[in-house]
Each structure stands twice: as structure tokens, then as C-alpha cells.
Amino acid sequence: MNIFGDLISDVGTKMSANQDAALLRVNAYAYGDIALLVVCDGMGGEKYGELASALIVKALNQWFDSIDHTLSIAEIKDSLYDLLQQKNQQLYNYYLQRGYKIGSTISLMYIQNSQYLIFNIGDSRIYHLNQHIEQLTVDDSLVNNLLLSGKISLAEAEGHPQANVLTQCMGITDDFSPHMYVGQVSNQDVFVLCSDGFWKSLTGEKIKFYFQPELLDDLASIRSRAERAIANNKFFGETDNITVLACKCQLADAQSLDLEREKINLISCANVVLD
Image (cartoon, rainbow, N blue to C red; front, side, top):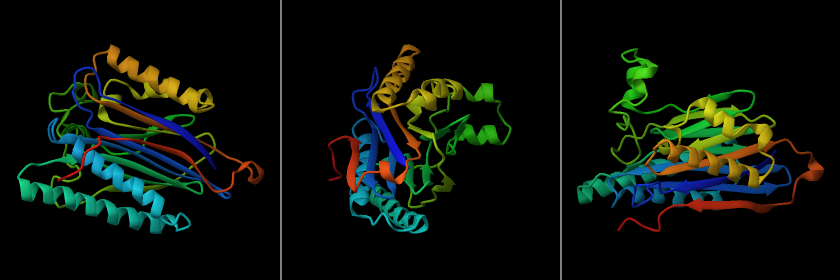
């Protein structure tokens, strides 16, 4: 599988700091590409919100460099679970020691040998596009719970005054209960990861419009479509941090695959650490 993509993280029109963080790593091997895609949305106020998201993304970046990518998808799942559980506890310990809660959402996708693995906590999303668009993640939010229980309609969910209330995120408690999924990657699949600042102002059909697989031929086309989507968000009044990461997967024959090398290494996060 040949994988290429890009990410953009925008501070938005009113925020003074970008609490979002994102990571896109792709390594090329003789048997196909291996990829790690991550979007995190930190919380805890402008002074602290960027700490949690940066901590998680930096740890995952180091993990990608050190992990044996020939491990099975089940072994990769266990390794990622252990790492993320440790980061969750580290953030929670910060609260116990300092009395200030900080946390982060996470949407993570690992792609290996035509399989994907997803970890999801919070309301950052992962979409799958091919012939149709499908949301692969579950929103850990009060509004989504009300919607699923039938207490509010889809129309009432849009613009709901408690839209930002999460029922789970990393670091707020010592409980760590991520949603985890394994699935298959097909030729021409596009995956879009984004923070709520991106998807709140865009319907699924709008996201499909911007990231139609047939329009994404190379890195330049992905960046152009992402820039247009973010500009659309701002035009319609979105003021939050806006982050979107998109990648496309294409089947490749053995002769077209490169020898082992680093293909894409993109990271966007605040240059801060927990003290």
C-alpha cells in the first residue's frame, strides 16, 4: 500500500494559542508503507490546554521511531494501549500534584499491511471516504449521548449550547477506556482526521466534497483541498483552533515500492513540556 498525506493546524481567528496537536508519519518499506496519523485537541485553558496534546503527540512520535513495525496489528495495539495509558496517568498525576486539570482528546490511526487500527477518546474524529463517507469514531460528548438516547434530535444537536461538554478525554481521570477498532484498508481509501474546530462547521457531505478520493492525486492536491476547507470554516464563523489531517491509500505493485526509508514526518504541536 502506498500512503501519502498532509496536515494543517490553524490557530483560528480568535484564539491566542493553538491547543491542537497533530502527527503524520509514513515510512516506506519493501512490503508497503506504514503510517501513524494522530489528532489531539487539548483542554485546560489557554495556558495549559496545549500541554496535554503536545505531550501525547511527542510521545507517539518517539514511539513510531522505536517500535518494530513487523509486529502484528494485535501486538501494535497492545503497545499503543500501554503507551497511551501511561500518558493518561501522567496527565492525571499532574492534576493530583498541581490541582489543575488538563486533558486532551485523541483520534489515532495506525495503518499496516492493508489493515488499520484506531484509538479514539473525546470528540476529535476520523472519517473514511471512498464511494461514501463514514465516521469511524464515536464522539464522547454529552450531546452525542443525548442524541443516541433519543432525547434530542439531530437538528437540536447542531448548535447545542453544551456541544463542548465531553464525557471522556485523556488525563482528566485515571480511568482509561479508549474506543478501539480494527478494519481493512482498500485501494483509493481516504482517511480524514480532525479536531472539532474543523468538523463543527462542515457536514459530512461537505467533507466528502473537499476530500473526494479522485481529486487527491498528490500532496499538493491534499494541501489545497485542506486549505480550502479551513478557509470555508473561517468564512462561516468558526473561531476555534482548526486541525485537519488527510491521507490517501493506493495499492502498489512490488516494483513500485521503495526500499526502507522515511517518507513523511510532519508534527504540529506547542513547544512546551510538563514541569
